[in-house]
Image (cartoon, rainbow, N blue to C red):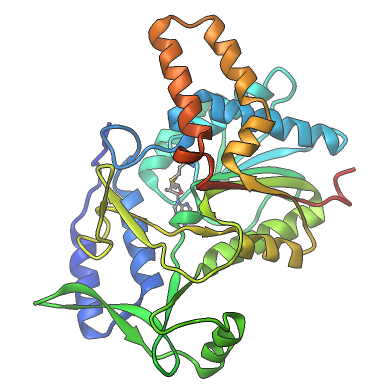
Length: 352
Ligand code: SAH
């Protein structure tokens, strides 16, 4: 059900004034729009704007939970292990993971969440596990962690750079009466422009490069933590394995594509995740990339087919159709199977 508590129309007015005075970078615009969007609703499901893997089927979280348990055992089953989820949405994924964990262990649960609306949904769903919330990645608990982040990194604000005839410029957002919010080009430091030319020697006029500074920073914090205390992190999202040029910014409203510039805060604005950049950051911090593959391959390898078969044994005809359809949506190449990638990082020297 779409939750419209605490909705406020003030964001558009405030942003309008700011962008009319002086254009802001796309990352400022996206950061404001995304915070407002999640702060004012539960966007998931048929009546919302989009549906995520854990909301499609319990099989997703169960298979991820089994994989995390396997890593925990590989680490020598440390008793001080904790679970951490970034951007837990309705708490569905964590609840499915905990159902798999519970016969064996009952680890403390930490959640990174900014939205008050979704925090209450998580509190209701996970009350039996007394989760602790943080709004960002500072002050992670000093212990080994099993971390999961599904469709979290795509919501973090990106900067966009566009090649013009002579140099790279940064994309920003302005506002005027005639055009409303609209893209503009802002100056860019010459050194950075030169760096982009060197990184992408084949670039052409109008090419776009996207960078997610807060995603990189969070991955760096996480990797350094795993290196120090042990554990692993699974990041699943739509995106690309090799860092490349291209524009991927998109907005979705009511399960349809919308313009990111119309009514900011009312549509879900995301960008594809640059898994190549996240993996490089993890390595730079001394963590290992344990796996980087597609969602379909990961779920197949971790036994989602067997889990589906088991559920089918007890299912009536309608439930069986739902299970088969969910399995297809999660793993088929034409659905989420290939577009979504899964990155697993860990600290091999800590994980005995
Ligand atoms: N993982 C869930 C929800 C994905 S939607 C699922 O798969 O269903 C993105 C989630 O990240 C939401 O819970 C949103 O409120 C949260 N989020 C987005 N940006 C955030 C930020 N900068 N800091 C903390 N949480 C954020």
